[in-house]
Amino acid sequence: MVNQVTDQDSRRDSGSPERILRVGLGFWDAKALLSAVELDVFGALAEGPLDYEELRARTGVHPRGARDFFDTLVALGLLDREGTGRYANTPDTARYLVRSAPGYVGGMLELAAGQLYSSWARLTEALRTGEPQCEEAKQSDFFDGAYADDHQSKTFSRAMTGLSSGPIARIAERFPWSRYRTVADIGCSEGALLTGVLRRHAQLSGTGFDLPPMRRHFEEYVTAAGLTDRLSFRAGDFFTDPLPTADVLVFGHILHDWDLPTKRMLLEKAYAALPEAGAVVVFESLIDDERRENDFGLLMSLNMLVETRGGFDYTGAECRGWLAEAGFRESRVEHLAGPDSMVIGIK
Ligand SMILES: C[S@@+](CC[C@H](N)C(=O)[O-])C[C@H]1O[C@@H](n2cnc3c(N)ncnc32)[C@H](O)[C@@H]1O
Image (cartoon, rainbow, N blue to C red; front, side, top):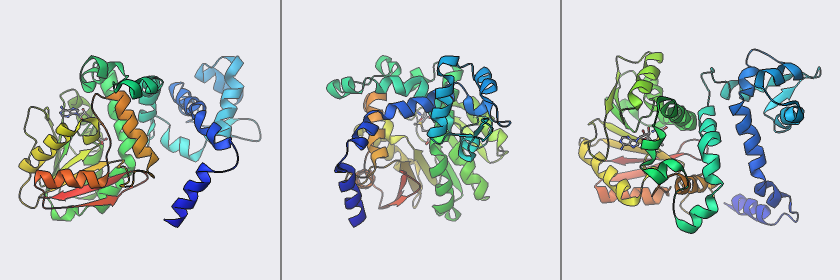
């Protein structure tokens, strides 16, 4: 705790304007990376290093900005440049930002480049009005808009897989799965959580519950993972349908999309769907109880402000309170990875 206080003091009072300017112009770094994802710079380098002209030709970047753009990525630690002047992926960008790589997390950055960046440009307006700034949420339910066509729903589901891959590995490892036989993931997207958990725990079978447009993406993903015999998809709407029954129900990045009455309604439905001693697992970038450390969780909540009509992120203590109100007899919070934590509730 002492170190955190010291860290915060030095962040506030460094004696130089450097940090203030770095945060204020942070969108420069972000946009350089998002454009690199849009132009598939990392994919162009997937087969090996390229010289400047080859990389420029592959990515279609105009000569006026090309050298500065590629060298900015070098300076940001997102590309390497060899002594010969050829550009190459770093080990991290080769692993996480090449679309064909199994560890690809760029789906979230594709979503950021195509949608979040422009919503965030109107954050001030959202703060003044409380209104979302993304077209989808303005017109109707966010997910109706986000799933208007197959390409958009695929981009969104890949984004979710990218965002959730770290916490999923920890949930598969740390939750006491050996006590249970069935699991249902509510708002499962393409099925990254279920495949991650079932790969490690052979006694489990699972159901992915999501809106109908997700069926195709789920079935493709689960087939590629070789788990079709233990995993199935149930199309449904958690506002109007009961939740599937299972020993464990998971809500990953679901509750933060919605307002408080909906959060409570979903936990009540989960309680009704679980057997006695069944468990609910809620995971998100939970805000720390003091609301001063998890900047990612707090920024995620602002992301919900610009992207949804009533969504907001919350602390572990708040979630435990809602679980108790829904009837869960015990609950606990466990940190997962980076900004993510899970809340476990037992019926
Ligand atoms: C933010 S994503 C989270 C995906 C995944 N659980 C994860 O953590 O990566 C929210 C998911 O909820 C699903 N969803 C939204 N509204 C829904 C509804 N009314 N009924 C069922 N699923 C819904 C979306 O399709 C999407 O897959």
